[in-house]
Length: 193
Image (cartoon, rainbow, N blue to C red; front, side):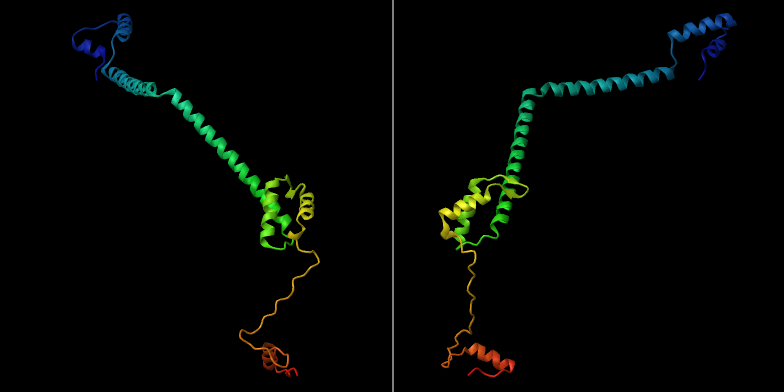
């Protein structure tokens, strides 16, 4: 690409050094080269594209209903609070029932229904749980034993052993058990007389 002074020289115009400096200054402040113009044009196109994008975004934002967004945020906040409360309640109930199971595991009841009634009443009582212990459980148990003593098995009472016999075996007329007789025979022991 030719500079301006080469173009002027080809046209037969030559400038002395003093005029050349002032001409160059004046020319550069008023005119640009094609390369400089192309750069400015590219920048202008980039700005126009940015402007179009921002205008589209602004139009989209104008369509948004701020009240709907606020209501939706409030709704989600309420849902989160509800879930948090439910989780805390479930955890508290689980800890309570676990502590209750630990406290009742050694208590002997006269029946399964007596145990279920006791546990149900203990759950309804909602005693405080601290470090896995039910505060007031001993008093509750004592009061329950006072009002429904029949629900609890005697503490020193042991369960009678169950005797298993051979199905269909007839008692031995001599008073012996045929199953024991068979076991003695298998072990090589003398029969009981």
